[in-house]
Image (tube, rainbow, N blue to C red; front, side, top):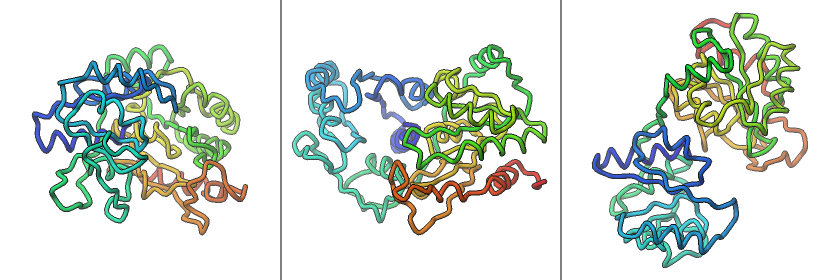
Length: 326
């Protein structure tokens, strides 16, 4: 969802008068609300995998006559139904499941030209009469609400002035994207020795892994997983001196609020979903078995992650912070 802001920016760059509304799940609304390019969010109350034909028809009918074009990002049949029921004249999407007729502006995905996920999104907004090319990417930039940030920091007892490190050890995709919690803990110890405050960010699902990090850090880190909403974490990550993170949604949020990022990759290459920032470093071993694109290691060893040494990540972070490694 964060990467899609690059598409919105491209559409506004093409024509500042473009009005952009987004139909998306309710959980994504706090992120979309921080994008100045988005006028309105149409919340789609459907569970993952639910066809919801009648719901999609009902939503679509409420949108009739409002839009000139729809751009459908998912490649599933059901994702194209709302624009179809809305009768939007130009319904743009990549060729995916059998949705001819539902989509009437079908694009062919050329992975040789657009390998990065963000490039694929942006090219859906390009003029189809022009030759396909690797597009210019505008990095996402989410708005930060300083007043809200101040209130959340006060509630959590966090100093906005103190230098801090944000650790994000979770990854919804699966264990093949998660650098070991004990490594995050050892990293926290190194930074704590330098006077940094260390905070572990994530959802309530990440609470246990957050506790593992705290334990491995000998108490150097503080677990904030589940203590902030998605909206609040956008503001809180803008406070961090640096974020060290797995390839995850929070990685993209940290990049989009201007926080320097060290991103760690395992089963998926950073060439596909890099942090969209000029102040970022990636750690990826490019082993013979990588990228495997699997949620769990097919061989059971997770060497693509376990062999990324703590000190290697630490050195990348110190480089971004502009000081020499101790």
